[in-house]
Length: 217
Ligand code: DC
Image (cartoon, rainbow, N blue to C red; front, side, top):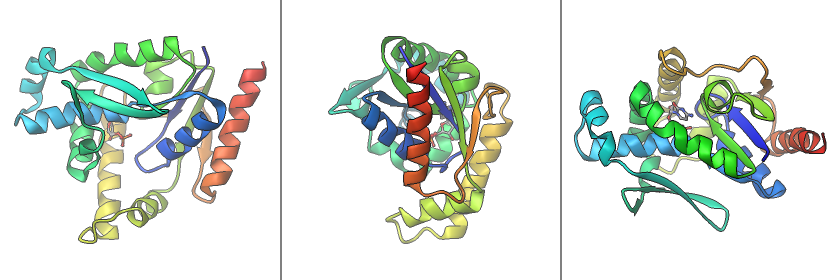
């Protein structure tokens, strides 16, 4: 199986780019952020803090399903793919994902999918922890301002300002890079792709051509 790992900070365009490349190549796109978001949604819905989430993990069942190539995340039997996309869940996913027990809980699921399928998997620790032997590792980034710009442009909620989006991005970057367990960082053998000055099409082309090179080897 061919495993491609894509890591990078919030708003770097990982999911749109990985999804498009996976569709072109017939790979499965695995969005691991959705797993952490689902764990956070569970904690929020049940009013849990860090310790009580750890104590409740045996009651949490998270599954990924694919319908016409699109990933759906199922939390205790309910499709929560939409519910996990709020700013509140984003911030809490960043918070709860710092818990080592939560990361361990989601680790096997990620590895199993990668063993059984040709995948492009995106997240924060895919190249460093989840798939250290990935066939290709890419670290996708862009300046915080450009990432906030992109996020802001695609937002439908007019009460949120650009400054708030930028602040959220910086806060999440800080959380994700400074946690003790599996922090966001570029793997030594990852290719760095800074997309600040690139269009989405250019990034997708670059990624698919790198993956094709790996497939031809
Ligand atoms: O990629 P995303 O924005 O959906 O991720 C939400 C949060 O989940 C992110 O701020 C940190 C966490 N996360 C993680 O710790 N490890 C991953 N592999 C993916 C996401």
